Every structure is written in structure tokens, then in C-alpha cells.
Length: 166
Image (cartoon, rainbow, N blue to C red):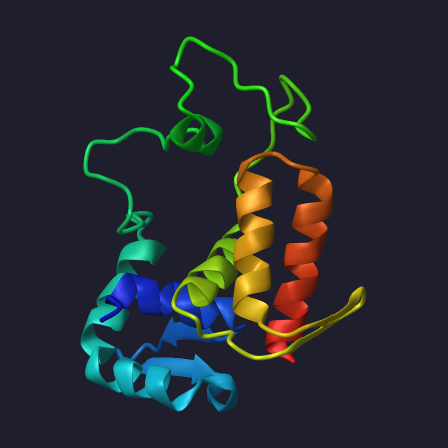
């Protein structure tokens, strides 16, 4: 089962805006794009989602995947290549020494939605049709994390976000 923070990220990835009204009620716009299974989870976890939104507004946003006390995330190229921390991995197509920024929050939310397979449908992108938008998003995110043609991957993720919202 997905937690409240993951649910908020997933819904934001679908282009849904979640806010808490002055009366403490949850406002969801546009609710029409939320799949029925996620709507059920939202109803079940409404109080937790409201708490998550309040925590994020207070600057206390922690992703559930980040271990407590961890100041940084590991370099994915090192995680999967068997390269020790004192070595520099050599990957074809990756510019050595190039740095890239973490994904913008809307794209992180898109990847969260793809992770739980909420985008399991065809996507109509400017570059063509993809049969499964979730798989496409996860592939682009993985390539971006490996710094493989990062500007292109970032552009493809923005296009996928637009396709997911339509």
C-alpha cells in the first residue's frame, strides 16, 4: 500500500493540485484525472494526506525513501557499476565530470506516479506514441540519473508530464 507522502507525490505527478482550505478540508483539483483506485486511497488516507501537505508547507518535506540521518543520496552510477567511491565510473554516452541538477519537484512526482504504475496507458508525445507511459517515464528518469544525455531526458520527462496531464 502506498503511504500518504507517496500518494501526494503520485497525484501531483498526474497534475492534481492538493491544498488544505482554511477550514482544514482537503481541496483536490482537478479530481476528474484521478484513477478510481487512487481516489479510494485518497479517501482512506485523507487525514494523513492533510498532515503531509501541512508538513510540506512547513518545510519539513522528507521523502519516505530517504533514510533518517542521510544527508545525500548515493550516486546511481556507483550503485550499479561495482565502482568503489574512490574510482570514477566510465559509462559510454556520459560526459565525465558533468554535473546535473536533481529533478524538479513536478517531475519527481511524475516518477512517483510511474513507480506505482499509475501511468500504465499509451502516451502521445511530440516524438511519437509510447505504449506504456509509466515505463517510458521510469526509463527516462533512470537515464537522467545516470547522466546519459541529461538535457534530452529532462525534455522527454517534461513532455511525458504534459501527456500524463492530458
